Image 1 (cartoon, rainbow, N blue to C red):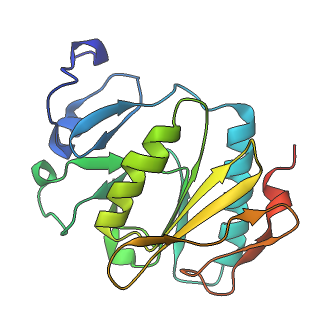
Image 2 (image 1 turned 60 degrees about the horizontal axis):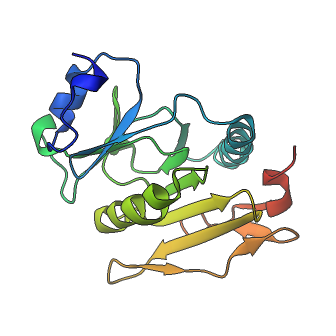
Image 3 (image 1 turned 60 degrees about the vertical axis):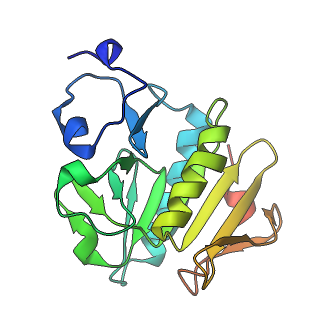
Amino acid sequence: MTFDSLDLTKTYSYADYLQWTFEERLELIRGKIFPMSPAPARRHQRQSAILFNSLFNFLADDPCHVYAAPFDVRLTPRRAERDHKIHTVVQPDVCVICDLDKLDDKGCVGAPDLIVEILSPGNTRKEMKDKFEVYEENGVKEYWLVEPNDKIVLAYVLNEQGRYFGLKPFTEGELLTSVALPGFSMEVSAIFKD
């Protein structure tokens, strides 16, 4: 099967996703295919590496694990035991998982504690609408959107009603902190160094 032979109007599951062997990268959101760019831009990769490194160092003596894309995160409102019940498979730029029972050899099943997505030309709607909605409905505790052009980080935290509320944007000259990872902080400016 080739990517071009997929019916983009059809709903797919993680079981389908596992059968695909083509080179194109994609994500499934509620069973719909979202193609990914072949390789992110250099600036995007550097920002991802800086965030990953800061989180990795912070979590060095912590039971939480941090992962960077490509890393499959399978989301479902309730933990599905069978691959055909999972219809959302995403590859966040960076994610932190503190419940290690959610990890298996294929990635993560269930909501990470923190997900970071870096906006790139062409992915803004997917990150700010489609992923925002599935991250919220699946219980991702904290979601950061990194906006490279304005050099800001938008942070959303899940409230007791299971809805995201936005914190004040983190801008250059400020410290980025986390509700899901108490004690974590880093200079926002460090993310955007060239």
